[in-house]
Length: 205
Length: 205
Image (cartoon, rainbow over all chains, first blue to last red; front, side, top):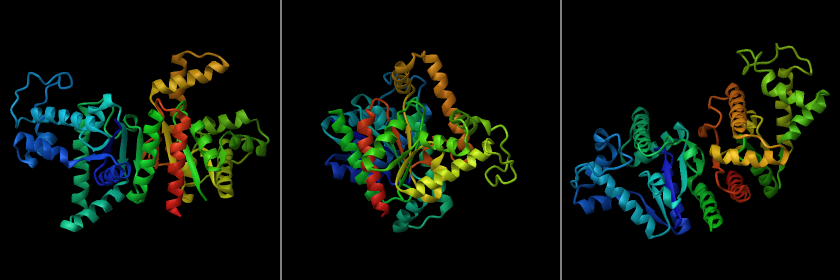
C-alpha cells in the first residue's frame, strides 16, 4: 500500500497540495472525511467530534497514554474513545488502498505501514497572505487575528504530536521530505512532489 | 542562472547527492574546487586555507562582521581576507553558469541570485553507517569517534551559518526543500531531486 501523509503548518497550502497530489497520483484523499465518518459512526455532531479530538481529551490524558487506553471509560462521546476510533479508522482507510491523508497524526499512527511522510511549511508572510485570500471569500480578518490563529492551531498540532512521537512536530527529522511553499504556486509544487512520490514508491518496489 | 546550493549534515550523503544532481542536470559542480582555487590564488596550502576558513577567523571576528570587513587587516593568509576572497569566488562561479554548490554558505552568500536551496539530512544511525562505510576504505574508526566528528563538524557549520543568517543552520525555514536520506539510495534520491529542480527552474522561467 502506498500511503502519503501530509503534515502542514496552518496556511502553508499543505491541504491543497495533498489534494492535488491525490488527484495526480490517482490516490484516495482523506481529510475532513475522517471527522465526518467518526461523527456519523458515533451519532455525534461533527463539530463536537472535532473539538473533542483537538482539545477535549488533552486535559484528562493519563501519563501512560502511549501504552494503553484500556482502563479509560468508554462512552461514544468520550474524547479518548473517539481517539481510539480515529486510529482504527485511519488504519482501515490505509488498508483499503493507496491514499493521501491530511494531518490527524497519520504519519505516526500508520508508522508500521511505512508512509511517505511530507511536511509542508512556509514563511509567516506567505501564510498570512494565503489566509487573507481565503478569509476574504467569507469575511475579512485582520492580520493580528490571523497570526494568533496560525500560532494557536500549529501549537495544537504540536501538542498532539508530542504525545505520540519522540520527534517534535515540524522537526524535519520526523519526515522524509519537507516542502517550503513560500512564493511558489501549489499547482507546480504538487506536480514536482507527485513525481518525487512516484519515484519514491517505485524504488521501494 | 540556475543555482542549486546543497547544505548538509555530515554523513548524510549530501555531497554525493549534489554531485549526481549536477551530472543529471548538466550543471557545473563546485565543492573542494573552491578551496583549491582559493589556496592557489593566495599561494597558500589548501589545508591551511580550509582550517583558516573553518575556525581561524571565528576567534577574531568583529561584532560588525555582517556590515563591513574593510577595517580589518588584509594579508593573503588572513582568515578574514580569505573569507572575502571565498565570497568573491562564489559569486564569480555562480555568474559563470548553472551550477550545484556544496556547502560554504553559498545559500546565503548568493541569496540575491535566488538559488534553489536544498538541505540534506539523515538519522544519526544512517549517518554513522555511511561514515563507517567511507572510513573502512581508509582506516576503521570507532562509533564514538565518528559521532564526535559528526557533532563537531555540524556544530562548526552551524556556527558559521549563524554569522550570516537569521535562520539557524538546518532550520527548514531557510531552505526550499529538505531531503531525508535515511534508508534511501542516494542514486534514486538524486533522480527525484533532479526532476524536482528541473520543474523548479522551469516554473521560474
